[in-house]
Length: 311
Image (tube, rainbow, N blue to C red; front, side):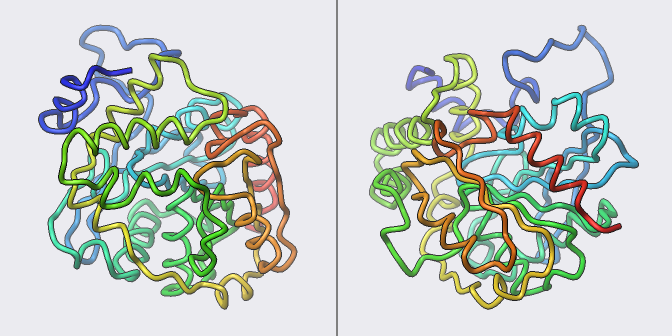
């Protein structure tokens, strides 16, 4: 785990991580021009530059991966670097606004309206020319997928995967106790020590099966890259997407860890009950990050979903 001073340096002075991969990935040779991904700069309608990263087979079925609160495109490392997925699918992950290498403008107008999130997703799809992508949303990514559905509908989407994802805020029992770690008195606190301690605790709470020390350091670094105004901007947004969920006529997979301490498994059961013909997949030994904690199973199920898309 990073020392506090190192965490402060990551949050205040680092513009980018030294490499786009976790500890198990081989280092690039010194001076090598090639990276394992193709970088894209996407401009949203409200002028925010989004950093997107493309992996895998350029001719394959597109998969668009949307991470959660205080996370980054690197969260999907175990999918983006999976040889079988890379062989068959065109995978795109991006840093949502305010996160990772994407722009971090100040002002609630960039974070509170659902339309800006919906248009951000659409800008990524349109700029990269993703044809009927499988859209995968983790945690807060569920809010973003809901914003997209409300604004643009399902017509351009091939399938959806809700991963420990927020689909409603009407029932507080659908959230775990660890959700309190992201509030204005916790990870969003003006007190730096409180914000740091809460960020560490929140990241720990994302996993039932804890990552290695090295991987946790990387994750903590990209959590620290999210400034306070962004953390606060993402909070308190309304979410009313039940009508959009009920209208879905595309393949939908709802994935959740049984031991999720941030978004309770009851959220997944609600989502699966509302979406017509949704498939529910519960991971008995995982927490809030089943795609990391049991990547082989998650990747198999994601591949099955992607292969079900009608082209």
